[in-house]
Image (cartoon, rainbow, N blue to C red; front, side, top):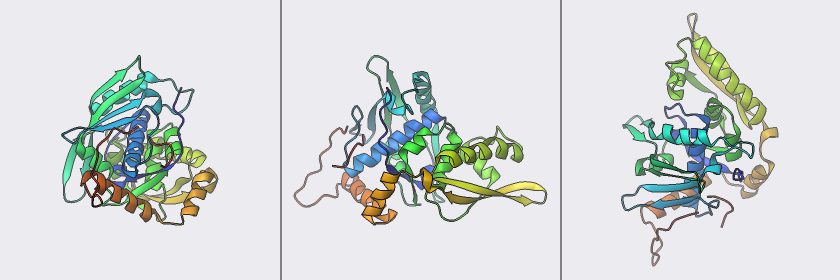
Length: 289
């Protein structure tokens, strides 16, 4: 049985949002759960039962999660794809470029899949942990449940790009291909639009509070760029989350400030006088404490 997804707004680093990779749906679900868990950890919230994050002496994180955490719903029993996703993530990396430093980071290490106990275990390097929480270039805030239920990894990517976006975005088609890791699959730009852009837009239109319209920009007769116009669809927004957001009556920046404060307390030992920092294993986000 899939672990029930407690819907919430999670905050993701913009560097992670625009990183260059081609991940499957199940790989993305693993990463969504990582983002959720890390956010819960630094906010001091409870994690869902069965999830643990332990910090080693070398600042690596050892993560244990129930296999069912990566399943979209009770009808999803595709454990084989979860195992394949772990293997693929082991063999892939994030490529980051903030304009000053370029680096490639392995996603996970030492993945294990326990059939009998129903959990997976893997390790992540400090660079991955820090990259997920690097908000220096901004961030995206999106609904976890919506993200987990997409059936296309490209819908997931566009959801992350458009979530909360108010102004149009312009990307060259080649840059989008590289960002999504499909530059070798679609040589012709019209094919990329037909196979990637159109299906992703259709799924966002049907399920997501954030979608987009687009305009093709040409150089001469050739398709060159896409101008993405954000489209908010309130009928797909979680009413409870929207109500909670209005009750707080604060900006997204407040959420980000809180994350940064808690991150500094955990990683840099910024504690109040008289308080000692303690490391302890944590168990995914359920309710605020």
